[in-house]
Image (cartoon, rainbow, N blue to C red; front, side):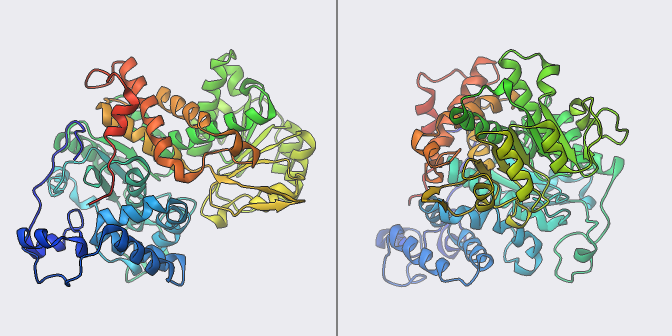
Length: 545
């Protein structure tokens, strides 16, 4: 087992309790000796299977399911029975499994969560638990090093799914383990169930959450405050990742807690790092400097402004002053181009509200601003039209097109559309998976600009060093490291990110870069190892019996 600071390992159960404990259960892989020692003889059929044989059987059964949702359900059931086997299957077939356990399939699973619910995983902290949140957290049997928490108000591009949004923390933490080797017992999914304003869910007899309108105002803040304080008391030093909170809460909660506890918001900071890495990769092909780019975002929420802030910071590192760097980033929201004369702007948009005439349509903004890159993060499907893509190709020799919204139905354009309308010149990445595209004899391999390239490694680096805070500098280091791991062969086939089967290698290098920042800024709980990368790798869980 790992020696990650501040963790505990509970004693293994015996007999039938062992077979019902997914963290320790090996099922038919228990040896003859183990069956006697652990009191499970007679509780299992006679034949002993290796883990590889179990994995082959599990994979065959998953692939036989008639739909991605059924495959999700089968994987979820395997996770509930045997965690080591679940992660063995996912790690060995990450290209095939990640879209099933996370985006895009997890979106549909969350929409139907109450109808496919089998077994609770994680903690549900309800609005009625105010005053006893610490007691609720103490019901968790393990000592986590990381919590992923949501209130379900902005699940992917699907909106308010209430307690059904629990599928997101569960899926996210599965990726922490699969992609970065963070032990499953160190991971705690939490749903802050404060109700939902989704009338369809409130009328659904199988909805699993509180049947009330969302808690707002002081009562909401008091619950979040109590949760954060209780988490620090019960699990000292735990990393808290805020996930899929609506814009009006996401920014202020990050601002409130980022300098007080070890926390980050992946929608704001993780998304920013993966996009910056993709742009760094694209610039290796275009030959330009980041400080010379003009970026136009379709969307102006937490993802867009988080990306814009990190890009502006990176431009400042190349010599632009902060104000000039921000002027290279433009936002387009549901009311049009975000400009200084508008009076309807939320606070997070103001740094990117520049002096310019109002432009109501996105194609007009592209023609007027002449961006080198367009970034879609508004979850409005089909908005990068043929007209927009053709204009981008007229403006740029190699236009950067990042259609990052998910699930697939929300994607701004498909890979095929991006390449076809730009004559194969687009440098494209996506939020949902698309198959390779062959155009005029050349095959392009688009890859997802998925946060799973960033957050698992960041989490591993923070946990391995016992870092007290998560900083913007760590995400900048993660972005540069990710871009540096893209090979020449990747770029030649149009891929702005490494191949997903390399994800554990990628995460280890990102964790080492994050760890170096923690050590350099005196944020770590101990001294740096002589070989930080080797130390980080030594902390990674391998799902083998």
